[in-house]
Image (cartoon, rainbow, N blue to C red; front, side, top):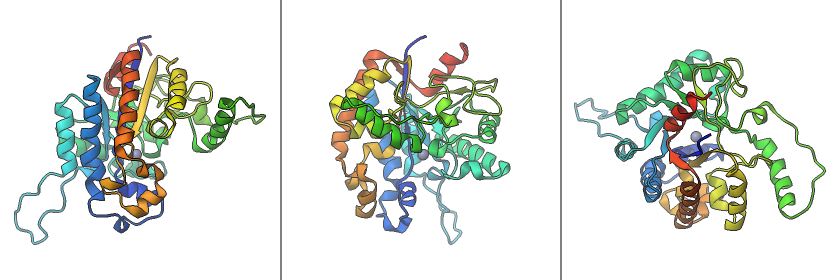
Length: 326
Ligand SMILES: [Zn+2]
């Protein structure tokens, strides 16, 4: 199997983090609105340029749609959103834009089928209009997949999905403690249970029509997000920017045993409080307090490792490469 690695970023706006922490959007400074959309793409673009590789940027459609325009009804042209401009530049630099739904609703999978499909199709359409290219890849908000969601993703014409993350949060807390014990040479007597997502294949596969986390015949490739092979610790942006470098290197050497590494970042992994997050959010979303310059240095080192060990390409390209073999 050819060794392929992909770097992708979910461009979740800061207001989604505020919502998670129970803060209202009005508690954010005005510059928070476009901070991720305008700052994260060029910063990641610069890191990827240094290793000569393209990446995948998952955008939320609603962040790209022009505003309501002139309320007085005059025919003033509505300027494009700054995030749309950043993504067009990313496209011109060879990066891929993926679909992260229309509104980034964390309760997406609980919506009735019609509204769920509208979220998927609406995201694809908004991106096509803003960027000029219709996305072929999809990532669900909060990583949660259900059979109806994945069917809607297929129906909207996507050729791959990259949402499966076999490291469920409740499992994680436990695995984190056990992983730390292992690293310090102690053994844990605890036994981890195996919720369905943890049984999902860690390497690319074709999902089943009825169960996204099982192999099947769906005409789409699932590209799982990277986890450590034994502990299933997540190997994502948060890991990269917050672990001490020797621990990150050790974890990477374990993850590197796999022939496919799908590194998922978030916009906040490349930003800090001074980028418009404001004090109330940075108090709760603690990784915003790490200086962006330090986080970028860390990611620069990690991307260098990836470029040494893998062919670095977009998720769409990886899906094409794997599709013929599944
Ligand atoms: Zn997201």
